[in-house]
Length: 109
Image 1 (cartoon, rainbow, N blue to C red):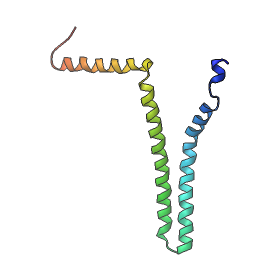
Image 2: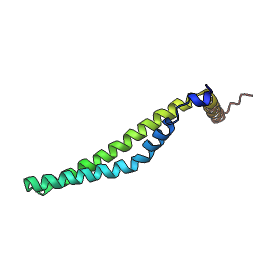
Image 3: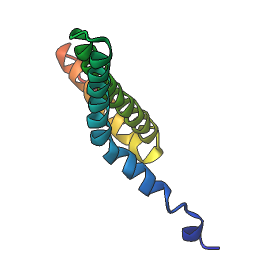
Image 4: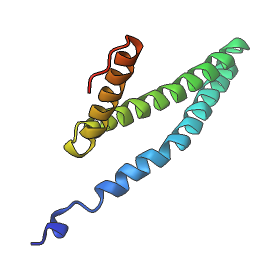
């Protein structure tokens, strides 16, 4: 088998769908919260319960965004550890060292 045939074909598609579904999941979370609040308001005949449902929906949407951010940040950290990208960190560290030396009037050649 070729190396190309061994690669999973659906994995990139599923990861792309997860990224696209963030916006949809935010809307759905808020709509579910509103529906929950509306249903509880009708059930208990208490006006403020509707707003509790809205708040729960918005909180769920924010939680979805936080989870997506955390996942992307972990992916970024893995990517930053790859050897082909490590040189950028070394260049930044060297740049900061040179700036610190200039502040103290020292220059290392």
